Length: 232
Image 1 (tube, one colour):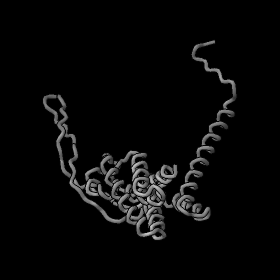
Image 2 (image 1 turned 180 degrees about the vertical axis):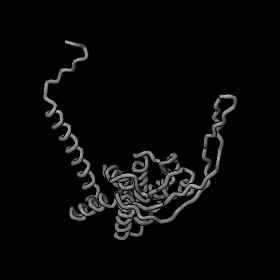
Image 3 (image 1 turned 120 degrees about the horizontal axis):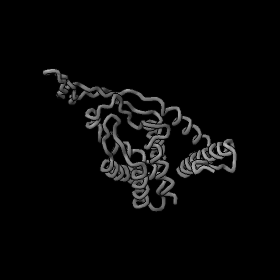
Image 4 (image 1 turned 90 degrees about the vertical axis):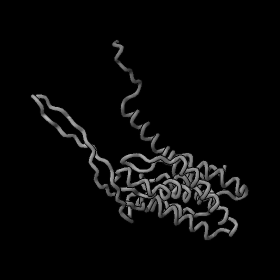
């Protein structure tokens, strides 16, 4: 038998079935975790379903807010021939870059609306503690967020929810879940997106979406993961 020969005990269809099953189980665990998190903060199964469907559909919708202009350097090549030889001479020109700032429905508006609803049902002390948690998460998120050329602002996925869970447990050990969700969502939005608006024009990205970049955006997941961690 050749050393390059790979022996499969089962057929390709069997492995394809296992792969589909793996993704199905992962999806169920994912959706189940979201359901547990929302139940912990007081939502019924019907409301949870509406939030998930709205987030899924809304993640494809960006509402333009404003346009930011910036003067950025552009390197252009100029070719000069001299005695049969061609030389490439790079030079810098300055051009105007326009970035459209938009807000994502599924990644920003819906999580923010959920946070406002939770705060409206909370005691005044919980509201005050939630805003303290938002500020704490915003500071941590802003410290670790990094601008990426042509893309936008990148943030490590698990730092904001961990910061939100820790802040909630420190501020209110007995009832941390609402504070964890609100701090995870609003703190991430504030620290990653809003506090970095001035940096966006220099990144050269045509569109900067607040709360965008995916079906279940990092802002949405920050609230969910924070609630699960606080529940533990």
